[in-house]
Image (cartoon, rainbow, N blue to C red; front, side, top):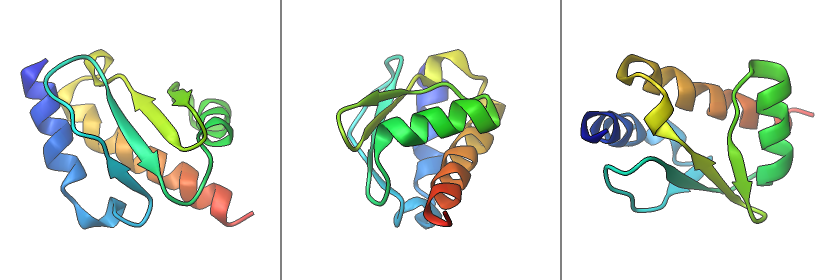
Length: 93
């Protein structure tokens, strides 16, 4: 789990995500949370599930929980790129 958490932190250090969300502090547990800046969490969660088959949990209006414990390290980049793509999809509507 620690290796996955480090992979998540490395991927999220990329500035391309900065306009879309802030990252809440997290450690090598099972999940982490994003504070969405431009879309609401529940509609995004539904869009990601229906369009990309990505299941996340919305917590409140702007918080999205990501369980990184259930993905492989080599899938981390793809996961966060897909979340970003979902946000871009919603903004272009």
